Image (cartoon, rainbow, N blue to C red; front, side, top):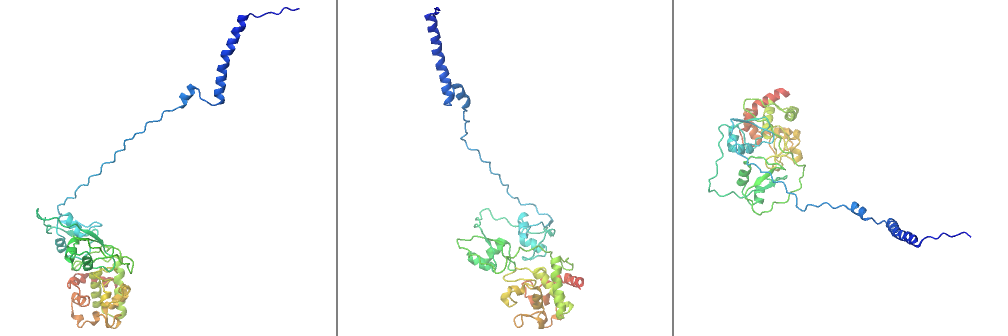
Length: 353
């Protein structure tokens, strides 16, 4: 029989210990993999420290300082820029609005236009109030709506008409129009009446027009020429003389600068600033340039028979001056204002034929 080789007992014991040490390490690795548990080195690698978030608010930008507007030294002459007003120019150079108007032969209702040259030399400076004068009452703003009058606005705000005139550089013959903003000085707690729904579309702001110079011819813009031609053609159609046409052109030039405007003093409208409240027709009728021209001439073609008197209805008008004849029809607060348009009116008639 073959002889069995026996293994020594110490060697067997050593191999058994090696197996016992290896098995837990293998099992622990396998168990961790099957449970998807990160090992210590992996856990530390995959964990990221959150970035600290600042809790201090960002500082707001400092407000810009607004430089005070200084009164400028008045030049001898000033060229009107877009957006300029007489009162604004006067304020800029520390002058009185009335002085600038008088120095340039303008009235409170006169219009200025970009490129126009105004003389400022000799205008009276606006006097500064005494040091101990009380501060003026704060002014509020009111936007004009269709049908408004200065007296009505003043009454609604419990202030005087004179105060509204002074605060806005206006006079008794000034024109206000829908959309215009008026300063109401020292207005109390009186509530302005609700804005009425306008009967007609809101009128645009006045378009600057050239001023008349006595003895000089004012050039016709395209709008002015179109309306002047309507007056001439309408007059010739009803058989009036050239002198009557000159009077009508001068009257329309003074009243509206030959524009069919949808605003005016009180309810005055159109080329001749005829008033519906005085029998000249409805708003739509006085804004019809042909009808308005016939109403100005009057006579047998007068569309307002028995209500208004036109040029042909004035006894002795043919022996009157242009300005006197125009005033007899228009009854303006400035009876001599038509004279400065006479040279232009005669030149326009010759130009239009």
